[in-house]
Length: 91
Image 1 (tube, helix red, strand yellow):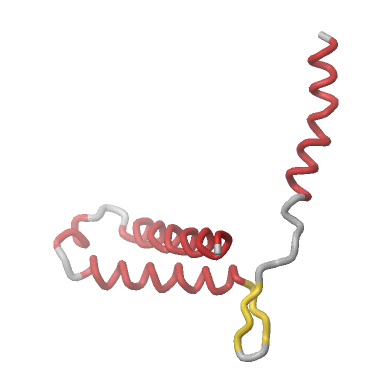
Image 2 (cartoon, helix red, strand yellow):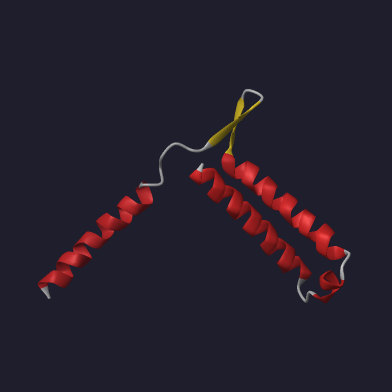
């Protein structure tokens, strides 16, 4: 019982350390002398990914067979943005 209380007492400390660990310097991209946040570029990559998916799948039979096209293209955009962000963080 004592070990459980000790573990529960450490839980807020560990949770705050995990949350505050992400407060490092924000990743920025210098474009024309101004620093833009990397998430903005990744979101633009996601939008472009959704547009490309719409152009590729829109003219095919598969594009007409998709039941929820908006959600499919939105998911493709989110995946593209997440992959761009993961690539940015790793590099």
